[in-house]
Length: 131
Image (cartoon, helix red, strand yellow):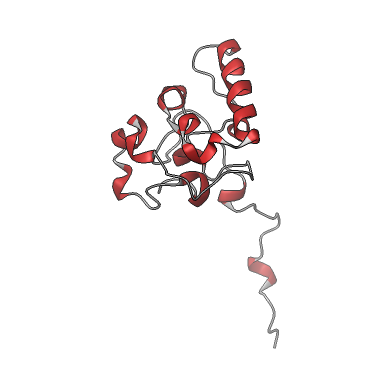
């Protein structure tokens, strides 16, 4: 008797778990879509959690310049954007200060998508995107 996996049901190709290969495109079915309108209204760049982060400050400058040069409707690579964490998930910068006051509750994106009932509902930069 074969106690291993039934080879007739094994997949012939490996699959990548969804959360490890997420495509951030306009109109995705995330609670908060990753789109230019939400990027423009996002308060993350003003958040005290990122205020002293050299990484975040550099990304704020470079992403602002990149967006100015992008055609309307296009969005930057989420890894290059220090914000909209409620949509894209945890921050890539490692020098954020999570002990500082979170301002998610004052954000128009947070209010529009009623994220007070989301999980998580704040510190998306640390806890991941809203679900």
